[in-house]
Length: 265
Image (cartoon, rainbow, N blue to C red; front, side, top):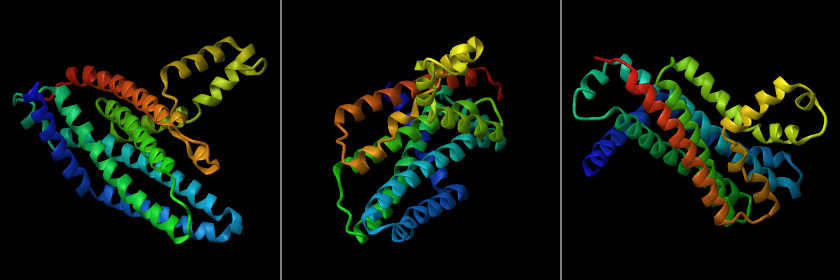
């Protein structure tokens, strides 16, 4: 077990350094900080009693969106770049299991997402301080949930990148994100007493399957609660963490099964 942890840690460090040096990450990082800071401009256009709400709402939205974009962009190119540059031909003959390679890359990407989150959060807090907006502990919890959502999307991106091209992996990963953000809507339609999901058996079956398979990413969005001052308990954050871990293990297991069958040598 210790040897496996050492191998995964080494791969994670290399992945972190490589991703941090990637031009795509640098560009996205600059765009992310700029987008967060631009919330100051938008808040200036709002009514005086709505400026703080705009700063909080748009800031959280920007951070969540850019975290997911970073997760998808970097996640879908991980395995493809290794194959394209023939790196796997050097790594896989060594005493390194394929699932350890995937686990190391996933861990390295989580570190990249954490660094990006800290940078964007710093810019966000600076914009809040410039408008004398009070910092609330629930803002930190909201940021933790944003990171969990990005981690889940990353696991999906790595799964798709284990068998598809970067373009298709990006499309599939984006699909998981978009569907996941609307699972709650499907659940409401399924609970209704009228509509196409009630009278069309095929559509209802598809909707029920979608709700069952796809993650509900709305669990990680608490922007409304933060704005309205509704407390976000640590029990909720803990439950969301378990939910995130479950889906990460699910996508990780699928990626390992697919990756194990690929031929590189």
